[in-house]
Length: 405
Length: 230
Image (cartoon, rainbow over all chains, first blue to last red; front, top):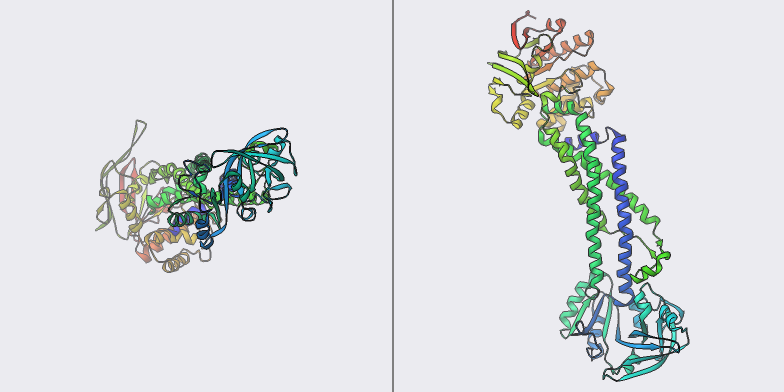
């Protein structure tokens, strides 16, 4: 085998200019593809992170039936105490918080808007989501139950600012219409348009009183130390809480999961397209080299170099060229990602990006699979690209090949 | 027993409907240890006969036996293995693998035979000394003269300890002095190691160095005889 490797390596660099061109083509192709992937995945990654960090968390615990019928009546009547008792001692849980989830109409003297009402525990919620850090005017919620947070976009529509009074009208648990005047404590601005346009945050106790929930809560939200822990935590909590629904962010946001899947599948298609193009280039170069080395191949065959070794040499030569190109491409992509580590400013497309739940600065993200997938595809490419040249080489008749000039 | 035998050997080339007879009903036996020239003008069938003896081509009719083994009974891979173990080849020019050094070219066949690294290094070194190229083992073919390359080719041909070395016009591209030294080398290898040499040539000077000359003309044996007791 060492002979095959030695011959393949040296043959690959025999015409260094020609090999250099192929390596450069592979490198540019792969680094360009990887950078595109990194930016695209950076966007998808940010969508997932935005969803997790702004509201969804890694796990949510609801009363059984909430998934099918997410109404006030389907609630954790113990106020989430059982869940919290478990979460406090569960390994891998970073933070958790209780919430009330309802709907209402928020009115200012000039306009009204339908809103989602989230009653939160301000201090705990601040550890679970980034809502506290997203406050751009005024202040975050404190102990005063008559204050609320709303998105800057919603505030603009209602023409209200920090300190202004608004009226929140809701239908409580018993079906009665009720309402309360609240003062705007602060305005938040997140990467999620849905959150900024139609969600308000108020204190848990105040929301429970307004919605007639007594001590009940709609959900307990938790974040894990890392995403790798989520499945395990979901299984363990589900087993320990038979009367509740424990769902992961993937179950809560299937559209995001679908987008990640689509992204992964499209990545394969992009790699396939790029590598098919590369395969033709590599095959062309190999065919030229086989033609140039016809006499040499004839001599090698004459002195006992078998067909198997000949095929192996050609395949390994294709692998050498492809993998050197791949390696250079990886380095190029890593340098590109490093240079773009502060993100790409897409503020010109802010509105569209916020609609998707993405911020205006996209930081490219490379995953391990971005390196392993091209490795696998490149190996297949090298095999495919070398198949025809190898077939041509083994079909050479030594007696004719040694006379080739 | 003859080491190489041709019996009723014929070869006809056919390219795009054009039929070209190359050999007609050749009967020839080469005994072990011979130093034989195949002579004749261009197109007389020398290279074709060498290719058939080396299993590089297949006859249209007749049989070739190497060490008693009929070559037509062997598969491609068996032929390849037979060439590796029993035959050495020296071609007219550009004999060597350009990406390998002189020493690596000599080791090449031994590596194919599975000779351990240390042993093949030692044997390659000894062979380089034998062909008077000591110290040039690290040179690549392009860094060597034509004569030096042919010497390496002879060293490679005998490195596998073959029964027969087939050489197709080995001196054709060399000046007379270099050709003479190459012939001396082949004679020495024949004398000292007992390797059978069968080489094609149309150079009278080279023919005169052979102990037996088989003269071909238009694909037939015109004459076959010992030249001298050298």
